[in-house]
Image 1 (cartoon, helix red, strand yellow):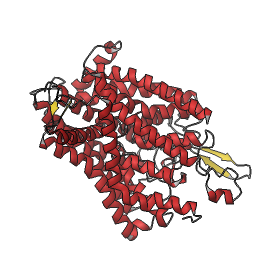
Image 2: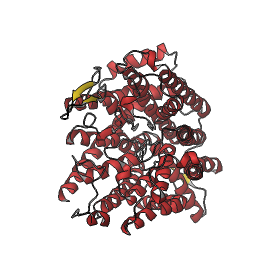
Image 3: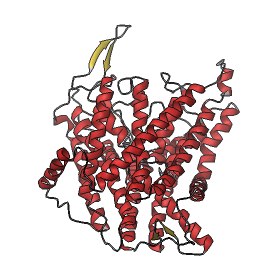
Image 4: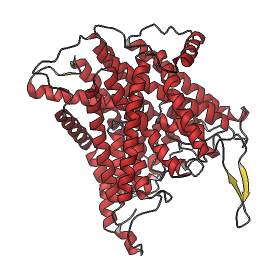
Amino acid sequence: MVGNLVFVIVFFSVLIILALFLGRYMGRVFSGENLFFSPVLMPLEKLIYRICAIDPTEEMNWKKYAFSLILFNIFGMLLLFILQLIQGFLPFNPQNFGAVRWDTALNTAISFMTNTNWQSYSGESTMSYLIQMAGLTVQNFVSAATGFSAALALFRGFTQKNSNTIGNFWVDLTRSILYVLIPLSIVLSLVLVSQGVVQTFGSYVHAKTLQGKEQIIAIGPTASQEAIKELGNNGGGFFNANSAHPFENPNFLTNFLEMLGLLLLPFSFPFLFGYLLKSKRKGIVIFMAMFILLAAGIIIAAYFEFKSNPNLVKLGIINGINMEGKETRFGVFTSVLFSIATTVTSTGAVNSMHESMLPMTGLIQMFNMGIGEIIFGGVGVGIISMLFYAFMTMYLAGLMIGRTPEIYNKKLEPYEMVMTLIGMLVPPIGVLIFSSAACVLPAGLSSLNNSGPRGLSEILYNFASPFGNNGSAFAGMNANTVFYNLAAGIAMLVGRFATIIPALAIAGSLAQKKIVADTPATFQATTPLFVVMLVFIIIVFGGLTFFMPLVLGPVLDHLFMNAGKLF
């Protein structure tokens, strides 16, 4: 336990220090300040604008910004869908994979466009190298940059006054990729390659086993996809086993770096927020609320995973600790930390199988996703979702003190609160509706690996992940069916755009407002009291929304497990 404690202290110390520097760096990038490599990147940025006929000085209102964002994403989705359908005719396909089945191709195109990277297929036996690179990896960059752009637009809602514009989507998209995502990905890719993560165009290796049988070992351009999948909070993976595969995550250092990568940008966004609003405290308060919830989830999950399982004790395992499905190279705690980190950041990458975790750990994972991926969350979208809860907190505080709510020197009126409620309520309501339908339809039940409360947990997870744009799977049910591919596809679209579009609408409304000066009666959103209220409201909201399904799923599963009844 001492070793685990030291690891946590070192890991989060390194992470927070890097996030502070990265947040300030991104603040300078999006404030238009000169950087030491601006002489190299600025000409390239201008060349991109010239080729694409973009006027970087043009400011957009929120509707034009949203239209550009949606149009760009639809085009990317259609292109990826078509690439999969004609895969058999394209180069860089040494295994001669044919066309991807239409429903799987559609699900995958939606998945990677929405930054979800939900994979109902096995990557190494379905996708060619070209699709992995020109299709999936490209979408990893642009989907992360889309979330970046939406967050920047919302931030400008607070910094602009008496304005109808919230920035230029094409400029935000370009700078996110050129100045942030590509440099970080190059560095992480090179380090991963140096540690043994494969990066090759060679054909799969045919090897002889000790029994004399032939085994096909999948290889490919993995490190380049692995880097942006973590940094962009995309998830998915080149291999079906994801970061449990030794070619994707070969040693302790790569495991450390992959966890660091998937948390780095989400940790940086609150500091970016504070930099752009010229108030470090505003960013730190949001960061603290997120970190408290993250720490609570890690502690609860670790407690249950290290607790003795009476069923294993009966089988003769002395300590009763469940190791099935865990990452045995790195230990139980690292598997727990990776699983919580990936479900709070909407990354979806895994280094162990989540269904192999004990029921109460599964409850934490589903709670993280079900409340809207607000505990750091995906790139950009995570802090958007957290700000929705901050708006709601300030609205309730305003009701208690009898004055119009205001936050960060902008008044919150009915329009902002309606948009906030849409962003907060639509994804969790969708989880409950789709899960209920899957529980009664034969097409939903036929894919289950377990019955009883464990089966309900499989279904809940299967929709909490797409609606949260997370992409991780419970790994116990077959999701590669027409029913689940289409249902999850709809869930991913709703989860993505029911968050981004209301955020852009709020940004446009706030930008038109004047900046309100603080008074002695202003309830400050930069105090410990606000942090406590924000965390409380998040827990209450999540508890009220998912109380019954979580009780009938993981909680009941936990009680049955202790009673010796398994599913």
